[in-house]
Image (cartoon, rainbow, N blue to C red; front, side):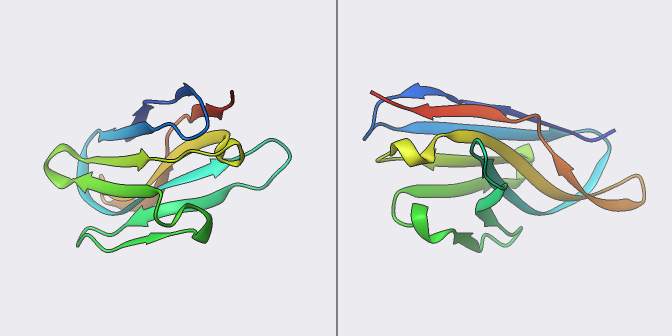
Length: 119
């Protein structure tokens, strides 16, 4: 059974920073792309950023220059450093990973972590 466990969410003032972490565990053979999605109230879930196993990253335009995604393949982990946070960044953030485990390849999700940007 593959699990993704996130941490690092919370309440922060506008202009502040947070760092999200996500660690994958289980009988994993390979991890391909890892990423972060978010879902604000009343909105669809959207991709924030993702990074391939080779380290190629992409970002949604609204976070470009403020967020940085990184991963540690040895720890099966992905991180999201969020700087200059804005109220519109408020959402539940979900970790996602494309993983091969026990002979099957699939997309796995974490449970989500709340990020609230408010004064």
